[in-house]
Length: 149
Image (cartoon, rainbow, N blue to C red; front, side):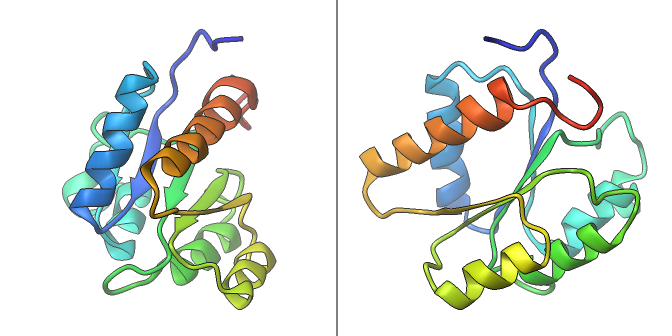
C-alpha cells in the first residue's frame, strides 16, 4: 500500500558518503518523500525548532520520521534523541537510529531514551540496500504517523 501523502523525512547524518548512498538507494526505490538533511545534532534541533537558518516552517517542514546517526560532531545522536523524547512538541515523531554501532550498551540506551527503532549500518552494500528497503517499507509506506497519514 502506497500512502497518498508523501511526508518529509529528516536524516541527521554527518557523513556525506553515507548520506549520498542513502539518497541513491531511496531514489532507486522510487521514494517520493522529500528528504531533508542535517549534518549534526545542533543543526537538527534548530531545524525542528525553526531556529537559525531554519526559521521558516516552509523550508523546514515537520518530519514524519527522523533517521538519526549516533556519532555526530557536537551534540551527538544520543543527546538529540533524549532532548526530542523529553520535548512534548517532538516526542511523538518516530526516531530511528541508523548507526554503525552494534554495541549492546548503545542499543539499550537508545531504546531507554525512546528510540522507535535501531538499524545498524552494514559495510556490505547489498545488506545496506535490504536495511534501507525495510525502513522505507515500514516507516514510509506502511506505518501510520501520529498526524494520521
